[in-house]
Length: 115
Length: 109
Image 1 (cartoon, rainbow over the protein chains, first blue to last red):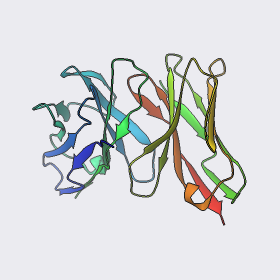
Image 2: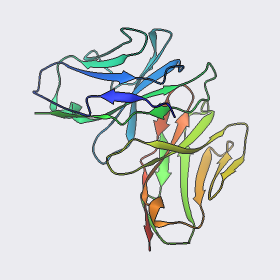
Image 3: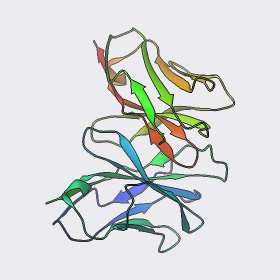
């Protein structure tokens, strides 16, 4: 069964540094998402991406965050100047089709630790 | 703002008993309601979903009900097994999901 893959599995970064989290969505999917989960808390929506542009973003997704689809397979999340509170598990997800009621399939996540 | 409330936060049941988790959502535009199971340190895995034009859906030991008028939906697990122990999240949405706060289910052998 096809899967969403994310790299790296764990990223440790100094506060203030830039970090890029990478995702390869399922190949025939059209919608891409980033979520984050602070340890022990719920999963929070960050951003959705469709047709090479952001379709929706949350309040968490401020100017420090950006997303990009640099080629036909990768989908990246960049945090420009990391803060301690950015420490969390970041999940990429993708879904198929043009209907808005589609299951989202999650990757294994990247655990981001800011020191 | 958009919100999904989930109860209970923890639930312990004896093996073989049923477990029920309830969610309430605020955004009337939500038309899709998935349930995810998350084991410690792993990805959320979709276990069942329901769309707004359906009131109930069942898949073996798992069922979900939706009351769109009341903005309530529930997960029912029957004949629980120790491997059902995990955190369960409900979600509501369209292009994005708003997740509930999770229910830690513990099935006691």
